[in-house]
Image (cartoon, rainbow, N blue to C red; front, side):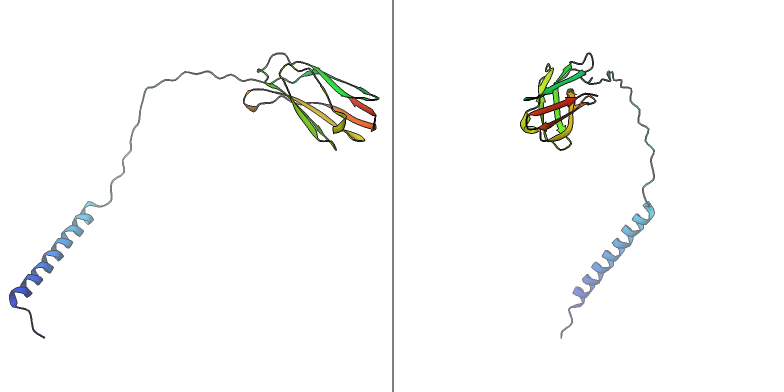
Length: 157
């Protein structure tokens, strides 16, 4: 193997020395600077807003009544709620062994339960008023059922 000329060896050594010195200077600068110091910012702004909030209630229907008999499926009637938030309609449902239900318009005051939804036995009729934003009133309830294939009954507490 041949050795490189002296000039070439001196150039490599000089570059290594400069690179090492530069690395030491940079490392010293990083150590001398240290971590950034904490700053507390004070944010102030003088903006004002105005708005109004209004609590509301969806009032339930009142004066719930029912009628039923031989060959007469149950019909529930009620009085429209007074005051409260504007109604978008009513929702009724059956529970307790029966299933079914539906929606009614905002001025509806009665619903007849189709005999096909009832079976021998009893269940519960539930009615709520629907308001804006998915809000509903408290429910009003009544009992409903069928004694035989042609004899229906209902009651309101």
